[in-house]
Picture 1 (cartoon, helix red, strand yellow):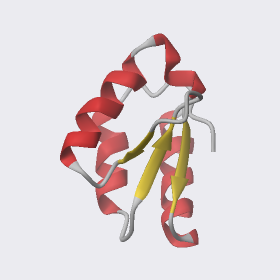
Picture 2: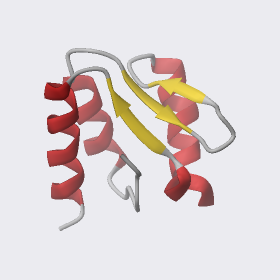
Picture 3: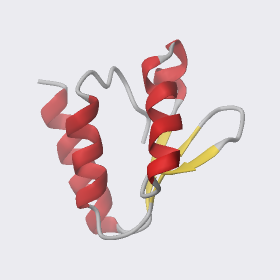
Picture 4: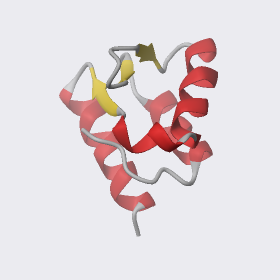
Length: 78
């Protein structure tokens, strides 16, 4: 799923941390960040804040985690 205008990074990371399995953020350049890793989270947050934040895609390993993330994104868009 494409990310658009993540303004509340703390809520985003809380949703990622609530996921049971790995969650990945992929850039158009092919960089893949496992958001369950603290180091990758720092790098990914930098990317989210940059202008390229809208070009990032979010992937969850399981359908349940995907639903959790989609609900979070929906809540943040209100």
